[in-house]
Length: 195
Image (cartoon, one colour):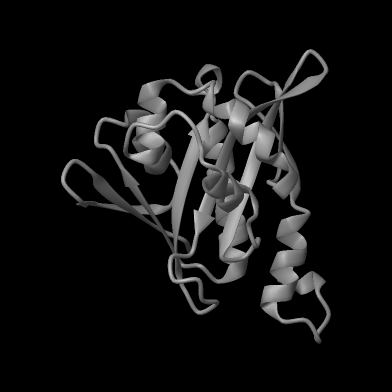
């Protein structure tokens, strides 16, 4: 059953998707069996992003922002957390650790031209250092793909540093048709087709 089928005939796709995406929550398992909760990022999650920046290495931050960065400005914090759940969707993954869920990573997509007619969205991920390589980005991509498909998005793009092997591995094993081209100097542009 498609997510959009849950709405009434009087609602349009935008209203349906915003309602579903804003309350999105799913349970998954890591490769080692630990439980993962994946839910929509909320505006009140700003502190999670602030703290998360301190759990990323300079290399991970460079991979994420394509430039050196240690802190988010107030404007960036608002932009990254006050999403509209249609043009800009963000998911938070939290891992069960001894009965407590620890915030482990965020994945998002953004439609660049901010129109409902857009069929492309740019992907970005930030996974806390100690949780990298456990399949969290793969799970986030799976759920972002599900939401994007229901929103009518046909293609993801991502701009990455060529030596970001972990992210390349996630994209290559995503079961989405992948194309690679050279972006700006020192970057690769990844395109993933959403069936």
